[in-house]
Length: 263
Image 1 (tube, helix red, strand yellow):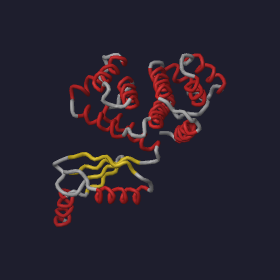
Image 2 (tube, one colour):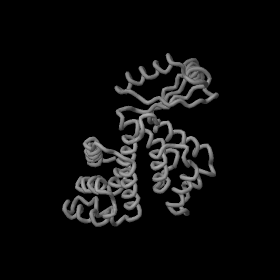
Image 3 (tube, helix red, strand yellow):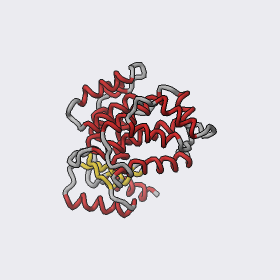
Image 4 (tube, one colour):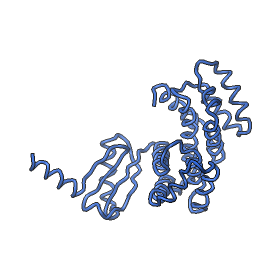
């Protein structure tokens, strides 16, 4: 991500903070705008071309997205006036904001992060399903409908909307990885990081508190702790935060000891 995009994306996210109502319809409109840019490289380039006048880009966006809701059009209007490192970054910003709108609108009792991670695990565990959802031959709406039929009413409307959008517009990304990235965005929207903890059996209250304390100390903020039960993790646990892995399993300790003895 370029420095210009990073700055614009931070600014774009503040647009949501100033809105008292963040509903699922707004998220779906932002996803529709992102999908529209995916299908039209020429439009995507024109709307992100900082060499042109911002007023011209805004006028073009108003014409291209006339069918969107008023709130969605206002956000698009703001986004096209910003500077982006690449044309694709504008599209990714719309997707990011759509996910964050879902994070802000979901019912307080709903664990949206957990839902997205569960869907990711479901897709990742079924190679045929992942292949079907990522098929380039299938129309985007067909992939979205497949995801819809798979999930039905088993998840929240927000989790369904995010999942349908991602399979509609994978852009070369793996479905499971996209869902995990969406979970990270949801956690971040609430001021938290995301840590995936692999253990042989579920953490007890003291263990969870210890993990949360360790994460807070290492990363400077609270983390959503997602458990993955893996019988192969013998003793201890593995904690993954983004690309970082903290391996406290017995296997890792033994491997380290062998290395020390060999050296």
